[in-house]
Length: 366
Image (cartoon, rainbow, N blue to C red; front, top):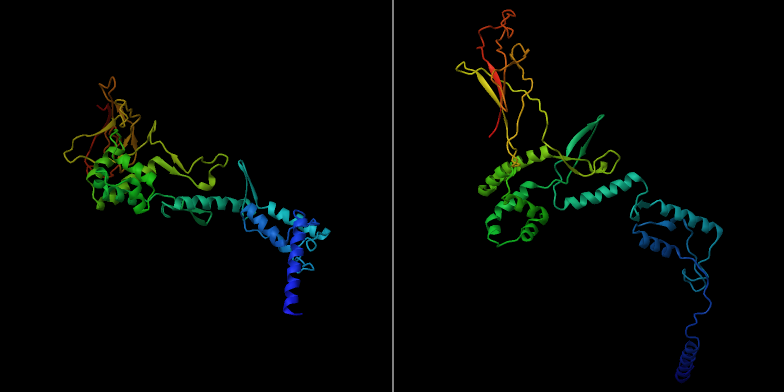
């Protein structure tokens, strides 16, 4: 075929195809009912669930049609055996569904234990951005040793060091909380809360001493201040296990407040003989605990004294003259080797320890 004939044939084919496309515009021709290919089915479920599932791993390989493509309608047929595999794949996908009150989400795992660990890992990741991995405790449960409360504790020393290092610039307004937090990789919310607390003026029995020390403290004093705050935290807060939150009878939050106020407190106090041989007087002092509601009354009930050597408690004798809001209770005299009333108990070191008298008193603090 000459070059001229080839050109004529090409032009004729172009005109014919253009005319046919205009005549059949909007008509795709016969469309076969087909299934998704294995790849299409897999990618669709991954997009819907957000989990890297492989539901078509048990499916037969897609065959190719006469055109050589595996995604044409004539090649994607459905057989009874393949339909059963689709049902099995759907059951496998449903096993990854996690029902929640607000809806359903899908997990790579299929067991409740793994679902719980997955949620805990998300919580740990959230806390780990501004916290340290320390602060956990070790528990021995029937010979199995494991850690609890690992991580999630704020590095208080880093926050205190930031407030001390930027204290002067902060007071002058030359720097902001967000800028300090961003530079030192700290939580801006907690850093701002700590700064406002340390600069607060409201009276507080717990904070007043710490505020006074912080105002004149240097960076070398951070550790001592953090230790004092840590002791108060241990006494006022209880850290629960995150995995037990929400269980029946379990905790409702990670940190639970603990009230240090008690209606009754038993205590033991060793008393040594005074060097001058005089009475040793103990006072129970009641204060307003910094709440500003005035003085409180304290009552010392049933005090007992005993000789350290004999370790025998001695019931006190009521003191005379106790009346009103001030009451006193005088304990008996205990001499080593003797009963309180003077009855000898044998040669057990009489005279080696000087006789002493302990009296206990309670009074209203002003």
